[in-house]
Every structure is written in structure tokens, then in C-alpha cells.
Length: 177
Image 1 (cartoon, rainbow, N blue to C red):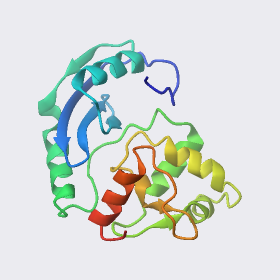
Image 2 (image 1 turned 120 degrees about the vertical axis):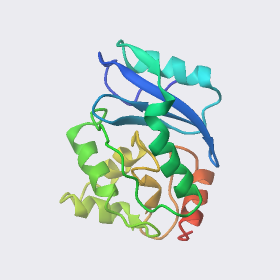
Image 3 (image 1 turned 90 degrees about the vertical axis):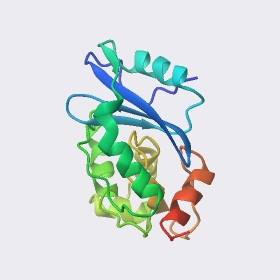
């Protein structure tokens, strides 16, 4: 079952590819503006194609060569040799509030964690910890926008849309867990 965290289908052409990495099969979806979605732990490429048909009514094209640099960055990240991704992002799948949270997530340094409370204060909305947590959980660009670096104020991991084991793996990879 595909979860609809986002708006009604877009009417734009999208390109995609899939690749294997330490967290499983990952799908990448981009628009002409940038990377739109990262989907981790895909059960298979056919799931990706179903997701794309749900995401857009526009043209869909598999275009692996367009993602070569980004896949190389993922490889370097998983090897411990990349701390920040450099690829254009398209955040249109989020509300203005969600986009604000996602932009702030990018500022959390590699190898460090922050609390939901810190994140709420950092976006100048200190009473919005729960809303920040929800926005964090709807991050369409996991790993690149490092929502795994947000933990509970008491240091417990909290949740992770991709599964707590992946969050634990990513934090250990970054030497914070």
C-alpha cells in the first residue's frame, strides 16, 4: 500500500532510477527543478513504477544517467566519505511549514543530533514540537535531508519513517549512535 503524504497527483514529467545500497533498494525521483523523492527499502522496481503513477499524471521516464552523480554521493556517504549531499532539491511535496522544517534539518551537522524541541525553536515556533515531528516524518528526501539526526530531548531515538533500524544504522554510520 502506497501512503499518500502529499497532494493530489502532480501534472509534471518525472524521471527516476533505482539503485542498491546498504539500506536496500532505493528509488530516486526528480522533476526538472531537482530531486523530489527518495524511497528507501523498495520491495522491487515494480513498486517504484506504481508509486510514480500515483505521484504524477505527467510523463514518467527511467533515466539512470541523470542520477549518476547523486548515486556516487550516496556511495561516498555510506562509505563514510561524504557529510553533505550536493544536488538540487524540489520541495514542492511539502507545505510551507514542512519545507521550513526540512530546510532547517539540512543545517544539522553530520555526526550530531538535535531534539524535536530544538528544531521547533530553530524555526521560531517553540511550541510546535509535535508538528515538527510530523513534518520530520513526512520528509520526502530522507538521508539527503537528514531527519534521522533528530532524536527525543532525553536522547532516545524516537521514530523514523524508514524504520528504527535504519535510523540506528545511519546514526552509527555517522558515529553518533
